[in-house]
Length: 243
Ligand SMILES: [Zn+2]
Image (cartoon, rainbow, N blue to C red):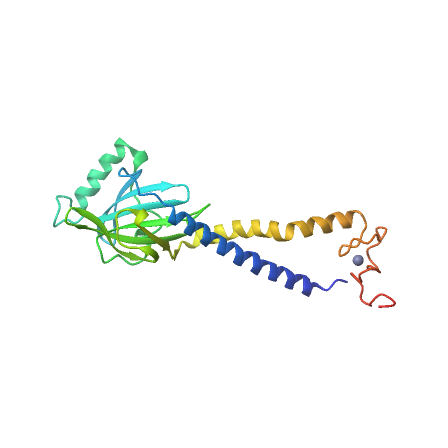
């Protein structure tokens, strides 16, 4: 009886609207979190050593609600005592000591999760987003005399300030997507938007249906909804007489 195409069209339109709003909200929340990131503490919460692209890496990770960072540095055999084999052997000893702070796999996001290896040997990756991390960027730090400065930003939209070891001296918004987090956050915020926008209407229509009233205008149809509404013309194939 009922034509399904308008319903399908309406659902499609709603999905696009709440999906877009969900995506924009995810980005806005991530950027808000990215601008309020404190400097990472000096002591890392998680460390890992691993071989990737036939190169040995050491990472230091910090995680807070809504953001995470990890500094990564290549451990070069020619400049250090640490050959890849020695590094891994050392790491295996350490993991026995405090497994909660050590991990033998690279972080699941950022530079170490990319298919191609980085050209540089060290940088800090930062990610932001809530409930999941969804955007990330990278800044490279170098020693300038006795000062540590941020040399350059990758995947950032630098709003203000410039290279500085203090995050309060610059505002950089991450632009690189973490697809799983971005989709999940967009779905989460999209669902909230859907409730806020369409929830009241759905509740109103449900109540009207139960009370046997017109779903569109609330006119009392005495529970006989099939012929449609003589008051506003809802659910009528022909316009009401006199219209
Ligand atoms: Zn009506």
